[in-house]
Amino acid sequence: MKAAVVRAFGEPLVIEERPDPEPGPGQVLIRVEASGLCHTDIHAAHGDWPVKPRPPFVPGHEGVGVVERLGEGVERLAVGQRVAVPWLGSACGRCEHCLSGWETLCESQVNTGYGCDGGFAEKMLARADFAQAVPDGITPSDAAPLTCAGVTTYKALKVAGVRPSQLVAISGVGGLGHLAVQYAKIAGATVAAIDVTDEKLELASALGADLLIDARKDDPAEVLKRHGGAHAAIALAVNESAFVAAYGGLRRGGKLVMVALPAHGTIAVPIFDTVLNGTSVIGSIVGTRQDLAEVYRLHAAGRTRVIRQTRPLDSVNESIDEVLRAQIPARIVFEM
Image (cartoon, rainbow, N blue to C red; front, side):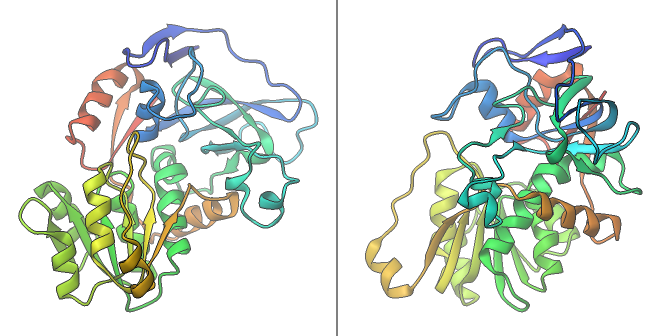
């Protein structure tokens, strides 16, 4: 099989031939049809974060494909069934987090394309219990971005407790942000979209954003305050100053939900203002299997659109460069 492999941090990925993997007990072998390129894959390939993967490895945590073989003991999936393999490749199922509906916080979790090989390959392995069935009517190239970009922003809005008529700021309208705008509108919110490119602001408008904030020209915090302040701000731009601006645009009682992960990123949270204004700063990491099932149901019902470009896997290094230069309107999906 062909795979895009990280051989060394910061180096271009290597397209190479590898033997087909063998499914072990509880695993399935998947023939990959499509796999999305997430900024997390780039962080993984560059070794940006404190906890690093171990090269050589295959990135990709938005893999979608057809089950080709079943490992011993697998009963809930069938050969020929289309499934997706998200960031949460497995969790223990026994800890406090798993048992209370927060499996994404499990300290024994294994992450796809980080702790085990991912979807930038023609074939991949997955734990059967964490491979998500893709409903009929969703194409592989739509399902791939929903598997991370979709479920991550959907969960962030859940964490924020967004309700109808609230003002929600979406900071960064890209692969994640264009879906966040749609989920916020589904929740009945008034949506303020913040970005620094005309194309992404136009995209946000086309997807239903009510207020467009060009951070090149205006201070997002000041604009949000003129509209009463945001009840929630979802921080999706990989830029520390964008987090600061989103926090500054909150109203009293507002919530900043951190999603993007700038390498070594920090912000200073003013204690006095946070206490007196009753604001919250919350981290939100991807979503559970149930969250992903809900994301798929919304898309199958025609409630969301996935804006994407499809490319061959051989273009992986050029595609990474374009994402880093902010030249991609939403999501790149590699089709195998």
